[in-house]
Length: 308
Image: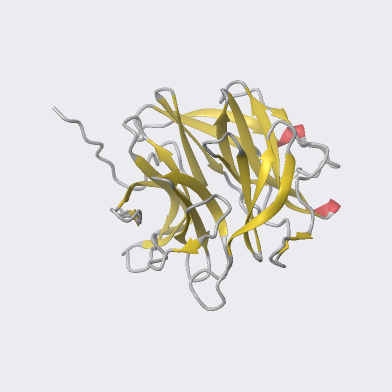
């Protein structure tokens, strides 16, 4: 008998409750989840926490895999700890989490760490210096390190890229993961619109499928929504999907927000998106949601998200 996954969003509220910017990775037969944990804005997050599951429905808390106690008052990465992700390359696990230090005047920047195990111990790679400083790309846009939401992507040729967001859009660099060294000049992936739903861009996530590159991204202009840009090369040109936003809470009864998604594969190779939602009944609580990602014959992203 063919087995189907039956689920109902939000997911795992008995264990995973109040999580933003969810990221899920399948490693072996186990799914691992991380994301931003509270307090979000009115306090300092304690670090990066990990959960695991065998079926995407029932989650067990593993605990902290990187705690902010590794920082001191003079560390540029002392505060906030937002939007962590774990990227597996050559059998090692590279953790990114976005930190800052307001007293030192260091805006949001990706902290990179590496481990031979997904649950740690993690060794910091760029503890001495933040990855980004204020600079311009060839397009004239300014990359301001504030709210980076770093995402890592390794292409079929083995090159790894990091995308970050700023007020002027979403930018892509090649990166040497082991030394946290940026290579070459940045590429502009997505620019904010002036009067559309996406005047502020963040929460980007890149995948490659069927020879095309897809950059999912979020905006909080109207609510919290997800769009996608597509390219035939990692270096672009990138074109926004005319149907954007492809994930929106607008028109879904009981739902306020649905954004900052990631994409992952299940054990059968089916692609899914994970994103966080907030409900009318409890707008202060952030919840985990998942839904399938498919593609039509023209390579357009198809999803029923957000579902309740």
